[in-house]
Length: 525
Image 1 (tube, one colour):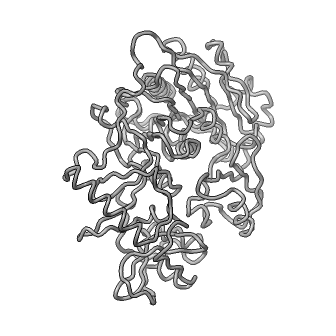
Image 2: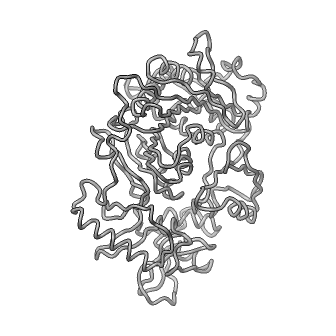
Image 3: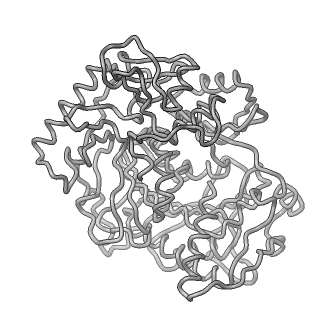
């Protein structure tokens, strides 16, 4: 959601820096698109209005009817979006949907309607190996993970360290154990393994996000188009090179500019072993262009899709789906080559495999017994890294086969169990929220006043005398970890998350949470 715009800004800064100084920018003239947008008057009118709030329900975490009932009880009136299963538009409500407990718990994701088309268009299936080359902040990534049922392996790559933090926050909040997050420039991605599907949500000028600026398109420097299209071409070529023959590549931008859309794909069709698969989207859209401003593009581009803001009251988006061909060179063969099971101990850890496996086995068993976990964890796998047990559902990963510098692994699934200085296991906040109703013992549901105090880093009295970690609950859902100490009950929900929850329950003001240790280390990522 909006990644194209921010990605474009990141690339522009790089381009200016390469020349040693800033250059004058000018606002994009949308009149240049009058000839290709059928109802330009309606386009212009809609562009000046704010976008409605749209959200996607997190499949597997909550039944759709239950979530809608909860939102209705809070005063929200919603309606489903035709053509986008699981997506709903907010017609009216008492405030921001992002400031609800349902959002905080990861039961929904606020997502621009047009971007909800991308994941179904690339069509990831359970058990497949999928790559998202430019994944932050994670809307399309987590949508694909939903469609995959958190099986197979979904590699989420992102170049920006600051945006990786937001990506991780969304993966953990929504609870997706099938995502492997890596940091690196997609243009330099290793080519030692092949994927079934690759999403290229390319950095771009972000013209399709103009509704967030009151209908005003972004500013551009004279050199920007040349720089960003070079990056887009390189990303798309990399995607083709790491896709197996017969696999799918989806190229997406949130801009109207043909130079960043049809021109980039037309170049790929001319140079690379790919064919374009016509898109038949379930939402209103226009076909791709075969020419613009006297410049011809590959005739197959008519099968691409352009979504304008007035099509279904959303943002702008361009999509082109490509099929990787077998060019007979041998490159791209061996789809299974390089994929190996995820080991119990992460490579490079200072513990041998046997000891690591024993630590995991004993730690998981102790957490299950102590918290009375009633859940089928047969499909869950465990990896020890950085003194933590990570829970994941990856059937395999490509890590041992990847070589070269410029990228690094960040997270494998969800941080699940910490081990304290005495080696005692403690479930993390993320793991407890993921387990939710499967936690049967050591669950404490404080009163509203007690919860406010806990989130303010205060200690409250408790009748529990068995010290140690407990699961805190609110409104029937587990919200995170607490601890019974000699002084009473304390919250161990991270500071930033506690602030957000206080806002959601209407009990705190910004900055109102006292500072203290961050037990899950999210602030340090």
